Length: 189
Ligand SMILES: Cc1cc2nc3c(=O)[nH]c(=O)nc-3n(C[C@H](O)[C@H](O)[C@H](O)COP(=O)(O)O)c2cc1C
Image (tube, rainbow, N blue to C red; front, side, top):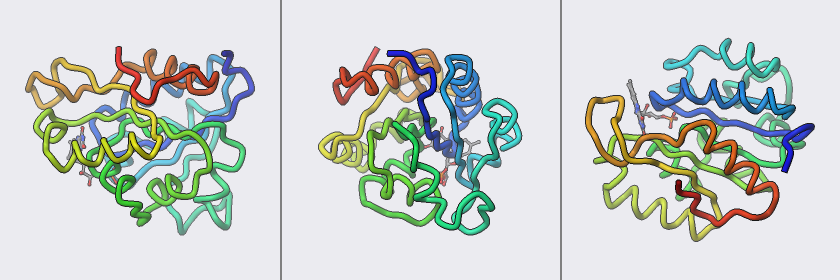
């Protein structure tokens, strides 16, 4: 599956692995995909929106309410996209998606997007293993969401464990498989 000419919508949420989303955008753009990025308020505290603007060549959406590109950004942003990828996916956005909560641009777009959604979770291993997160992930798998990772390894907080975000290369492979229609819902390495 070539990504050339494919439109990809990327939602960046507030995990420290947000910096790796920049490498993903760079890879996708190099592969010829058109990448549109939206960020949560927390994500924009961790990585500057300008980084994603520079790498995607497109303005970054930050809010439901102040988007000069669209009167209904939660619908307009995903109009041409073949897939919506949440990279990284925080425990918070996973909980919101599982509950159908739509209280900011990224969560509202998850609810409004009519296509495959791929989540790349990244969080501390205690957060990942909490019953609430386990329930939310199971519910999203039942609902047909795709997951890539997380992996075990060294976490940014210094702990070792499961919760490290999949590498950009693995996320790109997952996108390619989903678009080719050959992905299981859990894509583990
Ligand atoms: C420095 C820092 C790093 C964080 N990293 C993570 C993380 O990797 N995963 C996670 O689920 N939450 C992480 N958080 C907490 C989230 O930012 C917080 O739950 C926030 O409400 C998420 O909002 P969002 O889902 O709208 O982006 C981090 C917070 C800080 C201050």
